[in-house]
Amino acid sequence: MRNFSDFHLRPDVILLLHRQGIDQATPVQEAAIPVVRSGRDAIVQAPTGTGKTLAFLLPLLEKLKPNVMAAQALIVTPTRELTLQIARVANALAPVYGVRALALYGGQDIERQKEKIHRHPQLIIGTPGRLLDHLRHHTLLLGTVNKVVLDEADEMMKLGFIEDVETLLKELARDRQLLLFSATIPERVRKLAHRFMTRPEEIKIEGAQVPLDTIRQVTIALKEAEKIDRLSLIINETQPYLMMVFCATREKVRRVTYEMIHRGYLADELSGDLTQTQRALVLRRFRQAELQILVTTDIAARGLDIEGVTHVVNYDLPRTAEDYIHRIGRTGRAGREGEAVTFVTDRQYESMRRIEAGIRARITRRRSTRSTEKARGHREIEVIRHRGEEARQKSPAKCKRTPAPVNRSANRKGAGHKGRNLRRRR
Image (tube, rainbow, N blue to C red; front, top):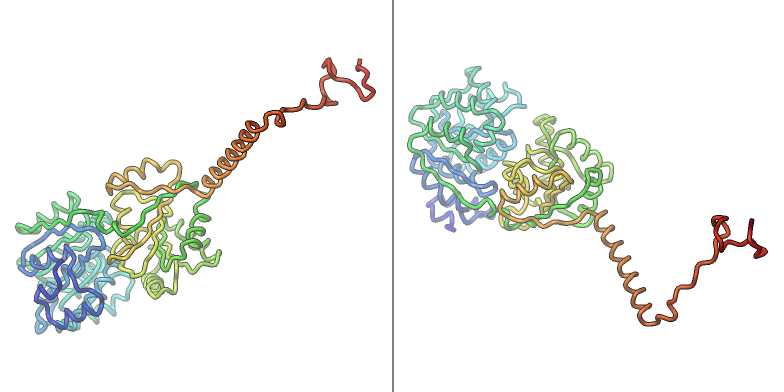
């Protein structure tokens, strides 16, 4: 790995990164930064948690002109959370380069956003829906933007934003540089890229398992009704610093969160049902460790870089290997160790095998509490039987079985049955 000083960044930028504990470039940063600097279009495919944000932010900020009071670069993301995360990094670096960054996303007062747009930020970060809102109101002009980043493009396709992205791209300058960063490149995303790109440079960082090397993965076979008790047991046994619990639906998130709070844990929920203000508050409390457990849907599986997450629990099985990787990738980041536990019910074994095939790894299986107790009971019975056999072999005479006494309630027709006066009953 190369140090950031090898990329000839500004000394104050290198110092700022060093204060955050970032000295060496990751493989995706090492491969992408020179390409972005060169001005060429690029398709960058890399697993989650590999440092894609700095891979495009550092060279982009270098190319912005502080004396030009107009939008020059645009970063499009699929979710508010990812927009806010990139904006935090950009706002920390932008003053060093003398430029301003602005985040535009739904859930905020659009009038206040219009006021900030009038201050002419050079870098715009936003979600497709809110960017289109400003375009329709003619408050955001993108004709001067000649550098565009589509971050998590595959997720934008899943959420149905591809048409919105195409509309945005048509509003940009013709001599633009288009950069596409994603964990996977579906065929539709690739067609979009080649439609708007000119001879793009393709960068692929192999090995989706790389971020999983520092994560201990375990599956637990159990019934649906046993999940909440098992989750409580895991929390009590492991005492996690920060834990993320992933559920399949918003309703399940509400139920699990209620049960966790009812049992006395510091827990809260994060889902699409919350307003942006509520989501920001929950995330801030979780980052500051005021909460120990965050129960969430897949909305938090991508783009959230939260330090200190030690445990991830898949309360509900993810649909694909890719979703599994994104979920458990919330822990074990930056070389730290983490643990990921996946609950598997009786009808999900085949789905679990497909996930194992997708990540090309065999996940350790652990029995549920009921299965463990049942197995322990069987072992104790076997021990007792074994001891009895040994005792009979050592003293066969003593172990000779005595005949059972005649039952007074036996069948009257039985020849051996007699009354109390030993006379045969008639």
